[in-house]
Image 1 (tube, rainbow, N blue to C red):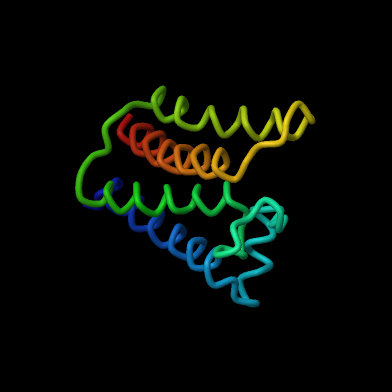
Image 2 (spheres, rainbow, N blue to C red):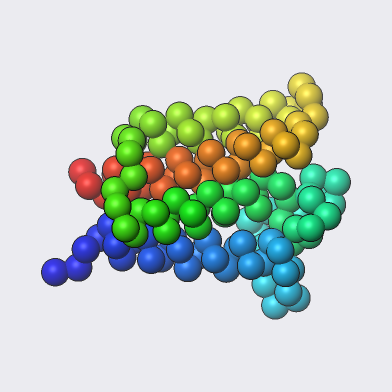
Length: 129
């Protein structure tokens, strides 16, 4: 019998690894994929991670680290907790998009990482239902 949690975590680890690699190395063959998931605006990126913006870079780092942990043990939390981890990124991005303020790269880093971890918590708890 296939362990859905382990299989799902391996898939998320692989996807996260591709995007984290793309964020830091920015190889030409990954740029079309990176461009589908991120606006890649230079002023919203760290100089050391040119492939993705700060929010997307740390979203994928959060997915990669959380799914790696998820492979070995169940992540604490629930569907609601996963959504609460995603909410700050949704609010930060939405408020910036509508022009109420300009987010900082540090805020993008924090909200992206929380959302990446929150996605894993949400998916893991949803798969257990």
